[in-house]
Length: 314
Image (cartoon, rainbow, N blue to C red; front, top):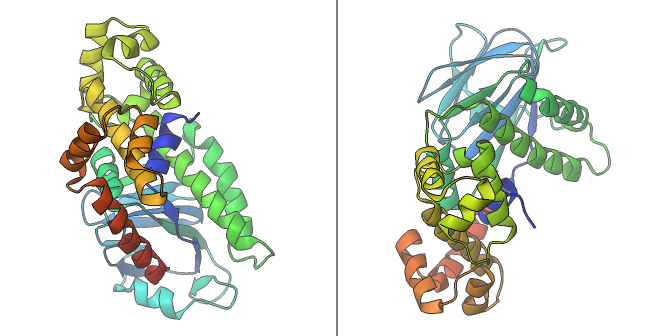
């Protein structure tokens, strides 16, 4: 049994890059190029500014976290200084302990950041659901779990202790989920997205029930009953919050689950489809192509290309 957010992230095949610790003293300005697919970071001490290409600047204080979701170039700065190439600097100034340092003396700013990679279709869906840049203030009540994870990350990254890579990778996964939780808790009703339904208490009940039994016989009426709402009211609110009809959501996430399993296992497509609530292989394959633009067999072949590219970038 999976909760909706876990189910969604697993279906999108999230992989995490090892976070980097950046310690600096004094002012700087760095420009970073486009990236794949989602960057996260947290300011452990000091203050700084992030300037995404799309959207307003993020003014960060100690304890703040951020997500950059559109893959566009961005700048990091602590004042009005000439910009340098941040990617080149990080590539050439990493010390033996894995920490990147700027300036002389004890640091007055410490940042931990990293990158998560999604399967390409999953990355596009995340971009549709999230704004280009998100700041989660340290003082927000929903940031309390993040502070615990950040404290642990701050102790592990750059410590060169046994098992550091594994612990840091797991903590980074936790940080991403906690950041998305916090974002969902902070958002209002003004921006419909498939992710927004998770933040609505009534819709969330229905979505948890669906994700826990994805192969079940789901209908708008059954989802509405799980939410404790009338069929018409549920359908209307669901569409306004998510931008999808309830059954569009059901069909799409079944197909995402099918796609993930097709790409990761050798199980027959008919078995995978039935396990995810699709009774007809033919109709499943037709819907699969309509949503993803390729057949299940072509998706499986493309997975090998994706994994090879990830190994090359690692």
